[in-house]
Image (cartoon, rainbow, N blue to C red; front, side, top):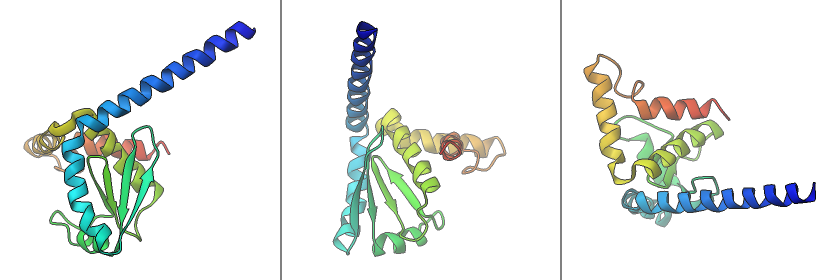
Length: 153
């Protein structure tokens, strides 16, 4: 019994290390996008914004503030509560719920998987949906997956 417990503890410790290594690879792979997110987030922080660390399987920084509220409300694709750019989530103060944060963290995981190719894959998924007569946002594969993640909280 004692040997089994030690073996399972070693396996779980090994699994934790593997997950940390994979998370680090995802962070590096998505770094070009994350730098864009930081470039967008720095003015928000300088204009009385705040930064929060999200400790998730795929970590992220959450940036909020009055400038984020202003920009998200006037986004060129329409008002939104939050958006993810690499490992950066920019969110408004009023509308960020656990469900929306879960949705955005799904996009962070997608960015970790696709890295700098993510914007092109996302646009391609929107284009494909549109070309097949579907809504470019609601039927985008990445948005469908993010909404599915919301339902599992």
